[in-house]
Length: 221
Figure 1: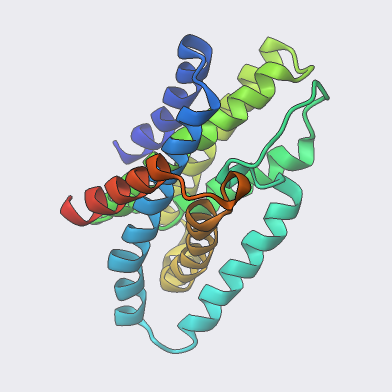
Figure 2: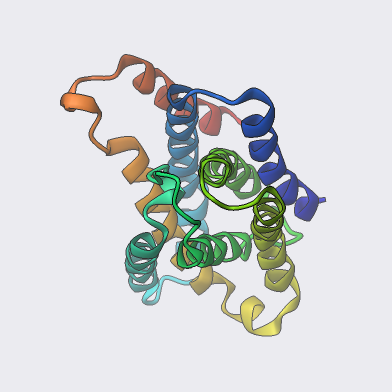
């Protein structure tokens, strides 16, 4: 069921783009909500879990996760936090590979155990990312068939990460360390979404409310 939910999160994002054609402001607010939700789940659930299981060098893995995401940002152009722009050009394959790697890694900690909080954090994060990716493909020179194929591959990445995280012995053995890497990645993405500068550095009240709702939802549920 977790694998299906992860897959459907991308499909929902794709359908939102192709059926509703949302405005940029809607996507930005959804990103703000998802960033706050992801940060709250990371702090309240993931951090205590990894430090409880293994405190030795765990901070180093978190820092390494931050550095890994910085490198992936270079290739993905910041698509994980909504910074992808289209000017009618062909779809850059290196951007897609980086997004797929990110999606695969974030699925690894979601095993068949008690990972519902993390599952929903990733689902809420993936919907706006899928919206951004779908919007880029829609306005690029990529054909509709190729676009759908790329989106299908992307939708499969997190479920594959979760599957291998549950069945591959190496990933099971080092689950705590891998989760710490994911924490670093989540900290980078969520804080960029929340604290990035708004237009003219003005206070954005609607974004602030979306962030508050994201924090509140994560803490209540």
